[in-house]
Image (cartoon, rainbow, N blue to C red; front, side, top):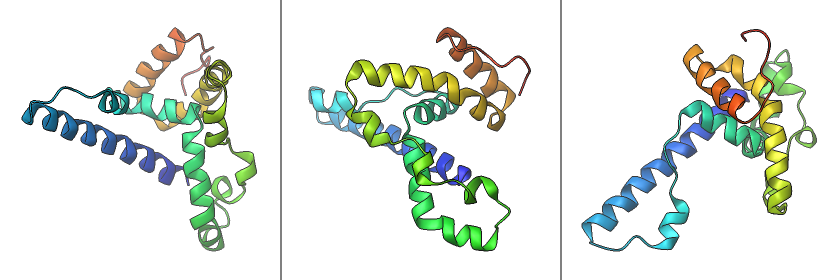
Length: 151
């Protein structure tokens, strides 16, 4: 489930970057002014660890986990019942991305800020040491209490 969620997030991000490159080429090639709509879709390239942290914090990754539960959990767990991380999780235990998006801005920002610090320890063990170092620096800037030992 975790590999599915992570690869899906990274694939979606790469797709957005590719679409942005294509839109920029069209604007340049057609000598058009950059439309406000296009600007609303632009995403600045970021380190992949930051993308994973961001999508984990705003509950988007949980929406992908819910999709995995609907499509694959029963099959996976019939063959691999000892995969407790994937087999014991229930959709109700996961964050609701749609609900977060409907929150008033101030509440959404508070929710995500608090969640950023909470999901960090879970994410760190899945990263390379270089990614960890960069993400821990970003977390420190946001005021997250960092783990005492290297994960």
